[in-house]
Length: 144
Image (cartoon, rainbow, N blue to C red; front, side):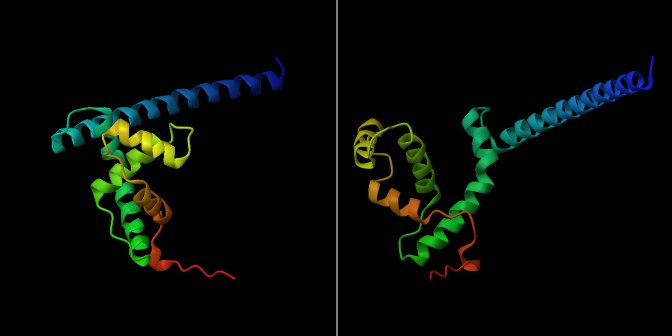
């Protein structure tokens, strides 16, 4: 056996050790994550469903986006967006992405499908124009 063969065997052993170690760590992390989600669902009194897990995972991020979007909305002198309206906006956005139609036709169809519970087109455009993922008070646009 020459030196390169010995190095390959040693390298293969290191790779398999790292693979096993990282796999064990990943499995442990996933189990801990699942347990924390189950605990959070139990404490909040939620049933274990995909929607409730999504709500728990997305809550902080969506709250920040709503806060920043409301800052932008205030700067443009439009009415604030409530949490419920923002959730309806997101639902409308996701539903509208399934259509390959103009916005007007999509919203006509969505009103029929949802019983007029989707965000109205004018308000949808207003929110979409103002949606921000950053703090508006720290940013100023300077256009040339």
